[in-house]
Amino acid sequence: MTLTDLGILNVSLHDYDGDMSKEWYVGFSYTHPYTHERLSVQVRLKINYQKKKHDRRLLGNAVVDVVNVALKAGWKPWEENIKVFLANKNKKDKPSDYMTFEDSMKYALDRGT
Image (cartoon, rainbow, N blue to C red; front, side, top):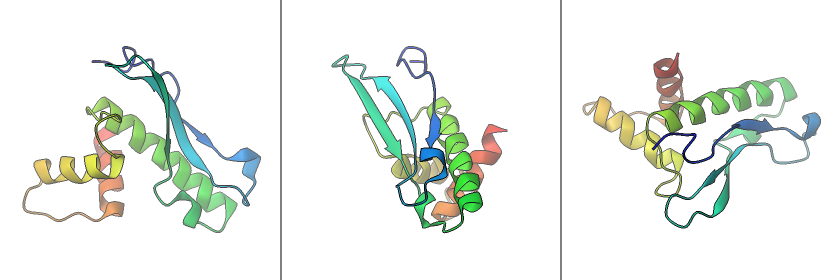
């Protein structure tokens, strides 16, 4: 099943034009393969922990990359949370290492470039 099959066209950072009082997230929509329902996904991955706009935007763009890499690597958002997918993917690729969330993001980014 490809991203096109799921109708995923645009994974993007929703930053409300830099409004720091709102919760930023990376979002996309897809068509559920069994119900054919159109569903939206919001991924935050600690974006809103950043207190400076520049830092939040940098992390947000990194999360866009992580989500794109995860989708291409086989993440099925209707089956599991992205944090679970990243943790399981890292365990399969590196069974002897325990990876933190931050390490998972770095690893996913490195694998996608």
